[in-house]
Amino acid sequence: MNAYSGISHHVGKTPLIRLNHLSDLTGSEILGKAEFMNPGGSVKDRAALGIIEAAESAGNLKPGDTIIEGTAGNTGIGLTVIGQARGYRTVIVIPENQSPEKIQLLRSLGAEVLVVPEKPFKDPGNYNKVAQRLAQERGYFWANQFDNTANRDAHFKTTGPEIWEQTKGEVSGFVASVGTGGTLAGTSLYLKSQNARIATACADPYGAAMWSWFTQHNLETNDGDSIAEGIGQGRVTKNLEGLEMDAAYRIDDQTAFTILQHLRQQEGLFLGLSSAINVAGAVRLAKERGPGQVIVTILCDSGHKYLSKLHNPEWTQANGLRADLPIESVLNSQ
Ligand code: PMP
Image (cartoon, helix red, strand yellow):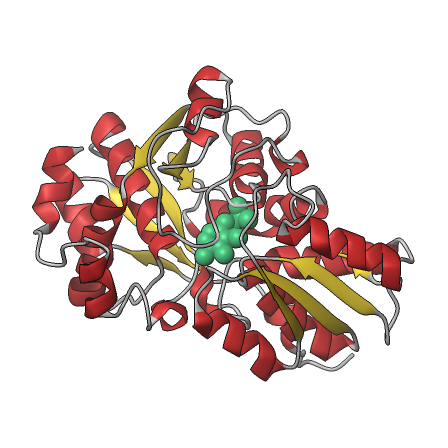
């Protein structure tokens, strides 16, 4: 056995970072799992590896095969990075409204990228449906991250145990937003299996249905919208089936954007908007249950992927986001 390993072995085991100011302001430990430090730069590397390994074990993937996936970008990046290391080609179907950085990165990594118009899930032109159809037509392996529960299993087997060990079992709350639901479901289910009193919460952007789902068991979404990429789910995916939450919060983009600026300027953390929505949810949970809580959330990906949009003052001003609000405004308004 060689003592050293390639990148598949280095997915996960990410640091847990104390968000110093928000912890001090709330009187609870607010901790961010640094998923942006994964080889492909996001939390989705875990799902990508889990899906690939499950397919290999089932005999559905062998070197030389092509993996296809419909993705907002990060899963495609994870599949491509891990795919390169294990001998798979990737074809990535991505909606046109995702950041140009992710699309360019996918192409630079060597994926074949199909950019498709943004369409609702029910439409046959939806990116996910296009991936499914092309898989059938061309004999590719469809990763199917939304309904393939190898995604949630990856978080049950890795993210959950890491958080439990890194907090020495002291974690008292876990918060995450939902794209496929793999992170929220797998991590919450593991933590609950260790201690049923750990509070789990969903942080949802406007325009998504998960807040309605977890609080009222309906899929109402007809209010508002969000510029957050990678999250904002309107249906109960297989990864979310059977999942109950102790709390769910709706987080508006301005609140998340204020947190995003704060994390950049005062914590040295350069992140995407889903991370800030997660941190906003963690602050809400801390305010409801604190002080003295140990609340963990996910820092999903880095700001590099959004330099032309979220981290471009011209773009954010044009989209009505204010960068000058103090962090206290978030704490007081929630
Ligand atoms: N944040 C970002 C930036 C993402 O790309 C994703 C995945 N699409 C998520 C959060 C949500 O993760 P999950 O699919 O596990 O719900």
